[in-house]
Image (cartoon, rainbow, N blue to C red; front, top):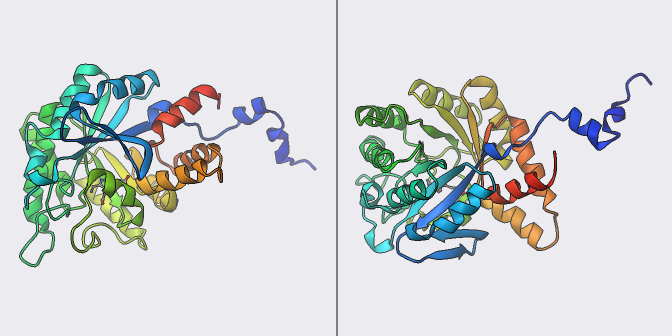
Length: 326
Ligand code: PBG
């Protein structure tokens, strides 16, 4: 037999020589939940080993993140329920939870790159990602100004990358405009371009207290049966000035990651969401899967075409990468 693929699988050294996909700690972004209050470091029951922090309690966690070699965090804010209103006002306050957390993190570790999620669902009393019209539908164009104001307030607090996750049409152009006119033309936008209406966000909505009070998000997030539409969403975002595109969720959407990577030249992020984490974590905790399943999953996401991976396993992966030479 002249062709024996097994020749290249014989030793670990040979396997690693011909390995096509490698994960680096720099590829990873760690999502964090910032809650209103003081002295809070609270584990999230639906996301074991992931905690909510009040802005004053970030130091230890940020130091750990730095010591693991991670360079990126993605912040989500969860203000008190009593403060939420129709218009999601606490989202763009200078003293909002995310704005405070950005300033704290920059004090603790100026080199940590802070990305902030821009959306309204965690700040509105109805739990939708935008402003509602009289019929109770999210009013796309009315929402854009609010999103731009939130993005600008994050940049003013010191955010390094702005990540809109709302799925309104035209948000990238509007946010780009607001950032540019505010003197932040150097701040990139990493846009949730192909974000599907997914059941895999369940644990996140507990953590961020952001579930819609009525209805669902199918009127603005994408139908999970559609792939071509992802390319349209991405093309629009490129046209509007996005710097990094994102596909979300990741695990069940590897085809989308692969197609977007082939069609669009921009760096591509994939968000391995809360349900993916909870599912794997639970299987590991019950002894059904080994921790190696996490690494395999994240490599698969990278192999599909993602350059950047947002995952609640970022700290575990950083430890694994350190321990095993790929
Ligand atoms: C806000 C937002 C959500 C997630 C990220 N940003 C929830 C949603 O759209 O309902 C989900 C992330 C995760 O599940 O880890 N719109």
